[in-house]
Amino acid sequence: MSTFGLALVPLLALAAAPEPESGSATKPNDATLGAKPPEGSVVLFDGKTLEGWVKTDGKTPAAWPVADSIFSVGKGKGAIMTSKTLGDVQLHLEFNVPYMPKAKGQARGNSGVYLTGSYELQILDSYGLKPQDNDCGAIYKQVTPLVNACKPPLQWQTYDITFHKAEVADGKTAKKARITVLQNGVKIIDNAEIAPTPGGNNTKEGADGPLLLQDHGNDVQFRNVWARPL
Image (tube, rainbow, N blue to C red; front, side):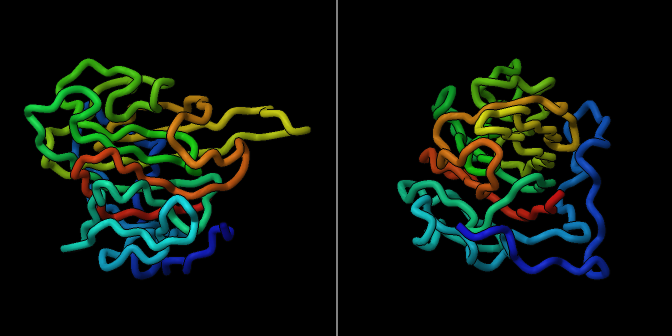
């Protein structure tokens, strides 16, 4: 894959978005819903096409449906990822999980956001549940959210993420990757150290990699996806 190099967004055309580290709210809110990319950002979804997104083979164009400035998981079409790569980054995306009252656990509005293709931030309908390490907002099977900041299904939600990749020296991980996450304006992960999770594209620790979104067979929707290299 090529290095991250999409066109930069002009500052004058866009209002700056809040920095994820600054969040102090305790209840889910819309503080960053519709947030515009700050200076130096790249728009990963322009509301029209999935140009710049590919299947996990790194070359076949993504085949998820796009309509009304939203793209949806193409069930059975597999995960998709950006053709460009990211390292240390501030990332914003908005997602909407379906209402699946007859489904339970991991079958209920499941998808995932993989930083550098390797670290999964879970998407799930976890509204009203006690936080666990496989619920929405968790780094899958590693980091449990500090609080449950989920909205009910069928409501647009936000992730505002600050990610710093691992540091590698002499072929060994000298410092693990770190992540801070705000969900719906509430800090749910605070500068946690993380290791690669299952299901990604096996990007080596310390390397730049794509933003990867998981197809788990549920109709999860996405919009307003942008990234600012740090």
